[in-house]
Length: 133
Image (tube, rainbow, N blue to C red; front, side, top):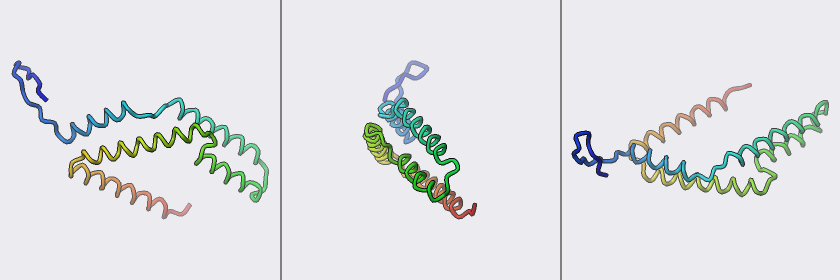
């Protein structure tokens, strides 16, 4: 793109890989289907579900508590709200498309940096998983 320099002359500004990535991320953030109200509603539903389940299990033997805890976990992973499940699929689809678009525009050095970061996260998770409580 052309830009005027402070002296009034027109200068050609070449976009770097970082400029392109920043511009793309800005655009993706502006077009995300994420809705904070929907996310908050689901968060509150999960919170109430946890509190109610734990209160109902107070004093119960483990063999009776285990199925209730497993059901709670299932409701935490797969919302009982069908509208939220549709919304979540839309979010996941948009995130995958955004990541693919971001990857396609990333430079070789940016991709290498991202791969190194992910490998570092994987090592950290392996260390955490190997720890005994």
